[in-house]
Image (cartoon, rainbow, N blue to C red; front, side):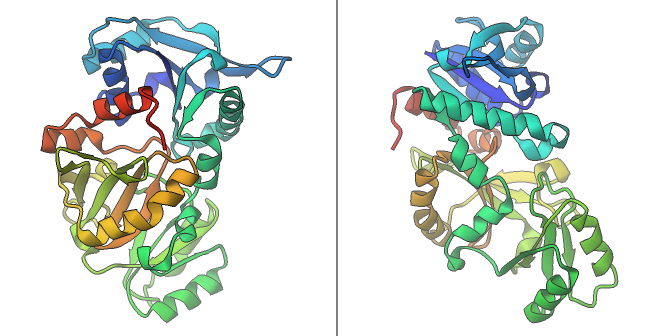
Length: 329
């Protein structure tokens, strides 16, 4: 099977990333794997999308370092994108703000491929719908903390006053813990400056700070609408913040520990799983603090590397096997 990975930039893929693990699993299963970036796409007068694709030879070692070397060395080849059997969208626009237009075009061309019969995961329309943290508000209130999304300072201050407790403020479209702040109360002397900093990027998301947040959060990988499980082991990790920081993101210095999916978390997944499927979001990362869902990651969600290390289960191979066997809901 021809599997094409669409990423931000093929040169940016790292062996530690879930995307690299999925590539290695596909190569190990004997599939023909290609990699292309959002800047490598084009559209011709017949409205057919093309891509400059770097192919990995069938039979190449699935060793992650070897694969990354092959991606860097192999010259790209022009290919009609609709000739792929499975198009995996592993982009992350929030980490590539200098190429916003290219990401929008990539989703439009991926939609064209889907209309032409190519299986596309995650599906473009769902990614567009879930492109910001506003998507969280489409789910039942019991699943998430009290939340406000606004760009009006007075409205934000009023909401914080009503919360009467600590809160987290962050950009509506952000990643890796960048520009995420916690305030103890509306009387925080830096509050207005924090609001101004976030507003420069657009809308501000304000959430009640959940008790226990100082201990970090739990990333739960959801696959085909359910917690990704193998042999009774969940693909979940606990992300613990470094000393002196409340952010648990691994890129912000947090560390990973084995994660536990509680009954309360499972209840949330059961409540939102059908909508994820309906929106074509077959692979997602849910971030929990306690029983509350604080973020939904649908673009290039990670977490498999640590989950495989902690459990010994081959989650990436299971995902590729399921998708290439056509087992989509």
